[in-house]
Length: 452
Image 1: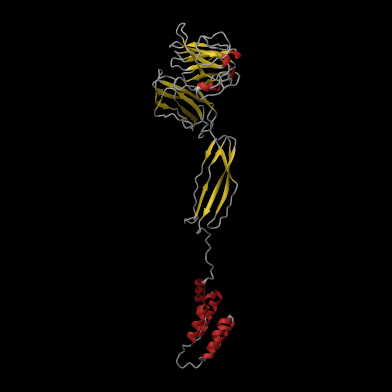
Image 2 (image 1 turned 60 degrees about the horizontal axis):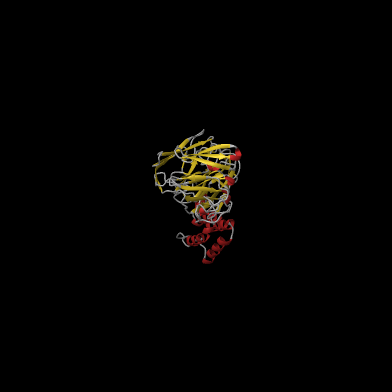
């Protein structure tokens, strides 16, 4: 393969006349296809080996002569590599590449032709042992080796001077940070991908106590899922402790793969009991009928992280309808943080303080008049008594003066037979005027004179 000239003269050339540029890695699959890491051209190329018979060569991964770490999630033929060194192919036809200067290991799915990074962050370093491979750091990985029987991928982490191993067939393990009882942690996503050449049938996904698939990115169905070759779904796993202390367990995926089940180990540091304090910033609120006002509640968290919600109720002291409603907004707290809730108080048009009637209103005035009745002048003339009663009423119930005037005039017109002390029409008229305009004393004096 190659004509001994460094360079790139395009795809479609016979493998014996193609220009390569510093090829390093080489792999052959079960169908006699050879995969070449054409390092200097930043691509992976493929050709069929049939003895000495020339066959065309083609680029299957990368953009010739363009160095970069890009293209994850899209077609491998449009992605970019930087000095690929190693290349391996599994029985399903998936291609594994050690992207040397991008400090990562990438894989091309045989069913979809899309590329993704499975090991490394793209930053040179050394970290991540015991954690998810995609969050680990490599430094110039050169060669790789895939054990097809176990699914173990061995990586020569060249500049770190170590060999590292990733089980690409098994699910990762997840560690969650300390989360308060009753709160919910941030979700950690796990992608479930079918790397085989037949449908992957997931019959069930179970979670241990304290964990759930409540993450917003969850697309895998817990009750069952079928993934076509190259297809994937996401498990958004969250930690929701209901008791204090370390909580561990496994998310178990039951499927039709060779191993039948896949397990994702889950651990957390501790589930500390959470707490917060509540104080009022506004203790008294005045609201006019038919209006709205607000008050403020202040919450301070010690180690509680989560959402605090409120239930409100309004009652009146005498058990009658309060004509007032109240609501309080929820508050999201982080450990050691604080927040405020706004209490909204709304009154309808009937809401008001109950003010009892004053004792000198009309009904009570009538009672006072009746109580004074025995003290009226003990004369035979009824007019004296009537004037006294009406005089007292005039003080305590001004609203009945006009009725009182009518009563006086009516009673004066009724005299006993033979009574020689009756007043003329003009005198009666004068008495009526005095009652309307004069004082209580004048009214009483006229009553005495009339009675005499």
